[in-house]
Length: 487
Ligand SMILES: Cc1cc2nc3c(=O)[nH]c(=O)nc-3n(C[C@H](O)[C@H](O)[C@H](O)COP(=O)(O)OP(=O)(O)OC[C@H]3O[C@@H](n4cnc5c(N)ncnc54)[C@H](O)[C@@H]3O)c2cc1C
Ligand SMILES: NC(=O)c1ccc[n+]([C@@H]2O[C@H](COP(=O)([O-])OP(=O)(O)OC[C@H]3O[C@@H](n4cnc5c(N)ncnc54)[C@H](O)[C@@H]3O)[C@@H](O)[C@H]2O)c1
Image 1 (cartoon, rainbow, N blue to C red):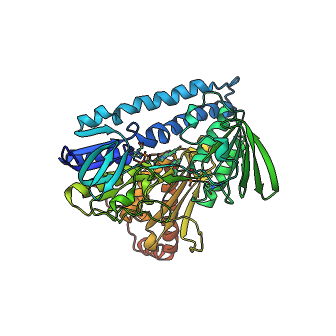
Image 2: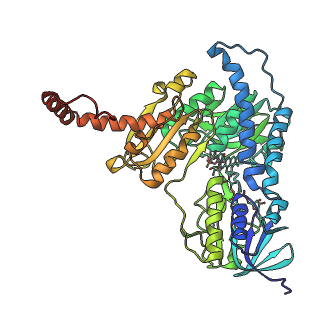
Image 3: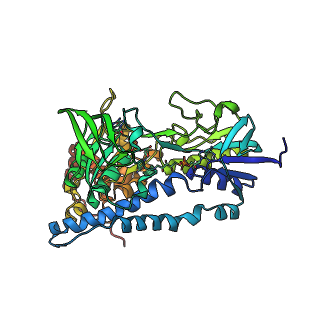
């Protein structure tokens, strides 16, 4: 086999994990080849975070215009042109794309080749018929939307997060399967843009991986936006024209029913993308769910091969894909064993209200004992009151000595409050550390800060007899009330 040379690192997949991994290795001086079957940027840029946040922004404008009357400003005649909304979505992608382009990668020292990679041995792969040899490889092929085995579903050719961006006409009736991150974000967006949305979630609540109080607030918000939220409901059959109108048969708490749709969107999770990769050929083992098995340093069962991003069971977001890609690449080319943090991992669902969480659960679940928590409701956060947005809360899960072990924040811009809480969890900070840090007033970040203050105050209240005795003693001794003056 004619080989050009042995690459220090071959990166398979040009999504966030691959992009960050390739750039990191090139910056460290490695000779890096990136193989991407389509176009660099991956799910986040083309079909995930960027288009969904752009769509949500348009939907939020429509919702704000319609509800501005609550604050005394009446907006009439709100109309939505989905083709124009999608132009905004594509514009956002186009503005960000140059960062991830082959030209930008080549400028950073990464050689980019278009092609589908297939592992052929412990240190070799095939790239559309061309053999490639590597000292180390980083697998970063991501994941694809899952389709549950419901009779008629595959034949109905439903929309997924990969195809929904091609819509230019708003479906009048949209059924969304799945009430996780994608189902709630896109369900709310399309409802706000004017579609009659039915959201079907198999489990008893939407966002089942979040604090139940967060799920309740998001379900209420979806209903306010007109979404017919059906939880504890399974789809048992789908019929209709491929890619067009039809109906789903559902079974829920109220028994069996049918729901008609003009378009059906499936968002019931994602499956790791290993089909074309042939991991077994390189001795790379998969777990029972098909994810590439990695240790804490992101090394696979082949010591020359690392993996990062949605392809592994330890990453579900762009931010983890990026951090893991960088860590794996540095480990691969420098021979390090840096491990990834699985504790202080933040996540945000960009519904309105947003749901932001990090670290240990703030609720009791699946037999786990209830953590000690402190909660500040948005009704007692001045900025939330001033904006008429009191559908939220900040809740901290506290460990020994009031260390912040986890947090859930629900409300407008909740995600922005999360950086501080992520640092708190990572560094084992206490509520007194947060409370003792001056926060600008009035911000939505006051929610978590006030929760921390509430905890500190409640502990101070327990010390009141001692502090009161000390104040009394000072009074009796005639001590001055304030501190010593500066002069
Ligand atoms: C609708 C939606 C909204 C989302 N919103 C957010 C959000 O707001 N915040 C957030 O953090 N996360 C969000 N995510 C998740 C986020 O997009 C993913 O976690 C992230 O993009 C995963 O990156 P990755 O590099 O692991 O994989 P991907 O981005 O999927 O990249 C994999 C790449 O590998 C290529 N590839 C696959 N197989 C081969 C092969 N054999 N040879 C060569 N190339 C191959 C693919 O073409 C692709 O470019 C969202 C996802 C969706 C679907
Ligand atoms: N803001 C964000 O960070 C963001 C937004 C969207 C997606 N994502 C990522 O994208 C990935 C996929 O998102 P997702 O929403 O598809 O998956 P998910 O796993 O978050 O949610 C899927 C939901 O579908 C439900 N479900 C499963 N089978 C069902 C069925 N047959 N009928 C009805 N409901 C069913 C599940 O109970 C779950 O609530 C996730 O890893 C997520 O982290 C992230």
